[in-house]
Length: 266
Image 1 (cartoon, rainbow, N blue to C red):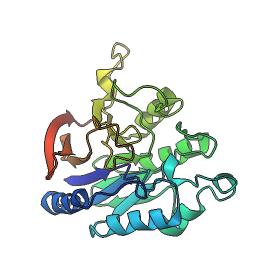
Image 2 (image 1 turned 180 degrees about the vertical axis):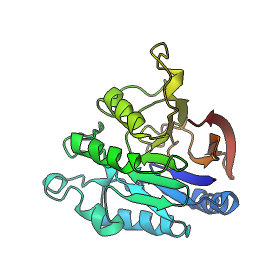
Image 3 (image 1 turned 135 degrees about the vertical axis):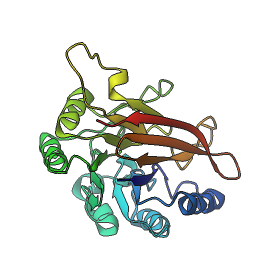
């Protein structure tokens, strides 16, 4: 069994767009040949339909199966639309806010963590956690079980402040691990990080199943003054024994691999 995922996040189309990075993304996808493209939100900058349609056209142009979930910037920016048509534009363009992809050896379950009353923070409801657990737990053990959402469960240490992790992340992490999730994909902070659950949770009470938390670097740069933010994507590859996470960043000419970590499964 082998599965390969290309993970993009935070395009922020409608704010700034650099054609050369879009061309490089197509070139990377052609080279990596992923089984699935996962986009974890903030695809638009102000949640306008035209911006979402542009993002959809770009991503679907890669000619790959696509699973996309909304971020806080994909909701309407203005009131009252933010509350009365919270997900309407997204659903018209991308369909479900809770998409599921199933293929041989791969299950990816999407969840919408964006909330209209939260400008930066995100959360999952008890019902969403129940639905995620039900989807994950019914998958055969050989299948790579992945959850995709916008708000991160693990963040790089240099991006605190308003970019808070998912609300109640300890409980969410516990529930997902118990349901059999092996890989959680997120974005939001415009910085990459990859960490394994057992690297930060005590093991004295017994063994814990492997669970990799991966945050993709932002693809767009909506705020030019933050020039220290690398732009890029993550690529994941799973075999029966391991999960490999590789980060590719833009060097001004192409997306180049700058980091690779391998984690045992099980």
